[in-house]
Image (cartoon, rainbow, N blue to C red):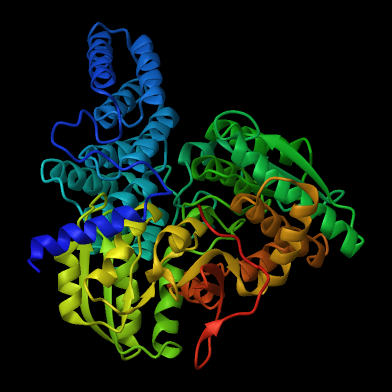
Length: 592
């Protein structure tokens, strides 16, 4: 069969897997919009966009922003949406509305990862971070992005901004943190020189390198400076724990899920341990400023002993700065940013990083699945390259051979060329990180191209939808759970039982995170005997807090729970020769 014919039939196989998932996209050149807008709707959006830009030109920024936000809300998949989102963010930056600009840019990057607007958005977000006092976050983010930068027009601006941050914005403490977090950076020499200069002649107001962490990498420096210096930790007062969650607003559904899980954990813990803890809830509306104020009120007025929350990363960071400055433990159970714990010594995360998952998977692939020839097929965008690189280095370090490492574009539908390359390499095991929508298209094409390898995936594979629509190729795949630590299996079964008794709706992963997170927090408070320092030490041990990321990653990897698909159902994976799915009635929460 001709290569073009093979690719066309493979595409049909993949598209047939989507029958129960979402409507097929129009791929014809005459289609008005790839996401389903009619020609009239597309034209109306274009006219509205032109009027919004004209309003900006006339100086009517507030009116233009309101109309732009409404258009994005109404037509998020309109082809001009990324450019409009960028213009709205630029308007916020022009008026020093840093939090709003960051929110707009974060949404742009999340919704449109393959858009050409991604690259200017990264630079603009770095500027907003730096302007709001988060220069280290800006530097680390830019340095990571430059590893896979694709827009040559914006590359010089990104490099110039990063150089300015390293040479003029970061103090000695943050420069050291940059070196710790980016040990393989191409700007290592520049950062080391800047650190030497800062240590020799500290700039006014710079934090000395030896100062304990109180305004870490993700902390807004302005907020940390405004907060009072950490006081000696007070003892636990009445067993009160604060919950930070968006209980109103656009993220309400997630906040309520976190609260539901936390309430279940509280009732279970008090009943089983004979304790008398109380949960004091505060609504953040998903806003960083409101999260910081809520954390301050819970600590100063409600006298809580510890904080749990938030759901979103930016509000969590804002609250973490407040908690860390006041010596009150904060545990983040759900926020996706992987460096929130770096805010300071009182801030912890109960979440397994993607890198720890890749490390755990690589070890099992060699030691338990006994693979010798490995291949990686990863998305060019997002963290695909990072996961692929870590997985490859792990298996090669254990004696495995990497026979192919191939990247694909997010949004692609025809994978013929890359799959042909994999077919020729004939791997025994294939690591295939990606998102659910992409995997539903990609996995069915593997068999068509004669790729009969044991499949390994990232956390996105932990999805019943993928198990249903991914075809026979999903059967037997092995992948990590980003939710479930090995130590938490029995605890999660309790959660599933309690949730089924209390609620009619299905289980949300965020509710499970709230349950696991509050249980961990309460255990640490109780076993710490009411002493904040003891509580902090217990949390550090149980969340694998470590001075360097490599140690933390290795500790988390040892606790990762692996899953598999058996008979079309997702089950915990049980290692051992020969490998088999663990016999379990549950014990996991899957993804979308």
